[in-house]
Amino acid sequence: MKLTVSTWNINSVRLRIDQVKRFLKERRPDVLCLQETKCPNDKFPLKELQSFGYPFVVHMGQKGYNGVAILSRYPFSDTSVMEMCGRSDARHITVTLSPQAKAASGLVIHNFYVPAGGDIPDQNLNEKFRHKLQFMDELRSWGGRQKPTATPAILVGDLNVAPLEHDVWSHKQLLDVVSHTPVETAALEELRQEAGWVDAMRLLKPEPEKIYSWWSYRSPDWEAANKGRRLDHIWVSDNMKGALRSIDVSRETRGWERPSDHVPVTAVLEF
DNA sequence: ATGGTTGTCATACAA
Image (cartoon, rainbow, N blue to C red):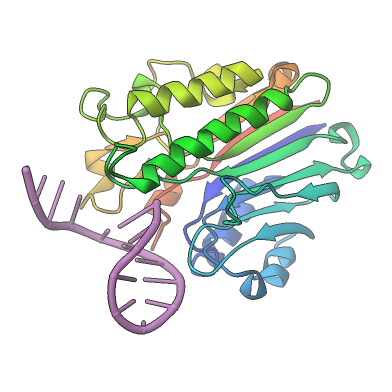
């Protein structure tokens, strides 16, 4: 069987509910992981999302900021959230697919929203940057315990770090810009490799191909300037490498009316 | 070196 998994920082699920609908209709993933739903739980558009053909939905939100959700065509046998950095700020949610997902039964899918980290890349001057690094530190300790060996697993999300040289439009010009500083890129690469996760996007589209999943709203013409970054990621456990069939980045959604600043990334796996 | 935009919630703040 084939399983299609997408990740998208939607930047307000309520404002962009029609774009979610359009993406689901056009790309037809089995599972969609959302970040930055910016929606308290009691205002989450649960029924509407279910009506798009995704009866199984878990979400964890808060007022105004953050928030993650997972929509699925298949039921879950287990769901949980982690509190990172001692804050209940809705930055993680995980599901395990139930036996009704057939060959993908037992597959664990983690959805993360790593803190953006503010503007100043200095832990002493910027509490947000300190929080981001601490978050990655906790990811590292956690990832070590959860070494993906026997249990197949996928980790997706807006990790807010563009780790490689060709994950940004200008490696040189972004070395002191939050998301591409050496302390962040080293931390992300180390925690990924230490836990045995495979960077699925780069496995199928190796450097030096440029890959971006985010373009700032502040650029007057994002398409012409093309000053993007690869902030959104799909990682798979080592035992899932062979199941990877394709990766695609839905760049076209950035050109839709009132777009998110992030675009969806989709992996197709075959079991 | 600076400011550029967007979303939430209603005035700054986060990204």
